[in-house]
Image 1 (cartoon, rainbow, N blue to C red):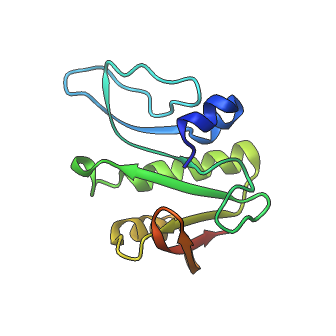
Image 2 (cartoon, one colour):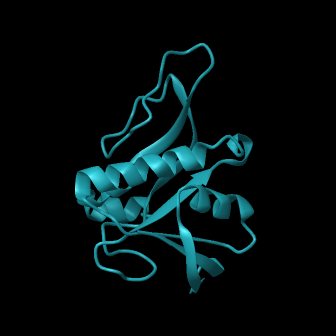
Length: 144
């Protein structure tokens, strides 16, 4: 996923790290679920994870022009509640409606059953494997 330094160097990249996964803090008002590149007021919410794309269309594991690669993390305490699926689905809908993207990638460790389940729930199909320089062997999934 895009890193803070990449966005600082090219602020236009910030739109691809579009969604923070938020939960309302007990006893607080409703929090926004769409942070966008502008940020969000966090006093009434806690961050339970993050989701976004690895970059603009074309920046993906397959180097496929026009395709986006989805990435997400839900912090351990908040896992198993469908938050990654909800965030991923929202990101896919946004990319389709705002940018007309119809081809998506996702990758995960073969040992990460929860992440594989998220991708499957979102309609992705496994299409291969790749070696990530940081994470080692990954299963590659695509959605068209």
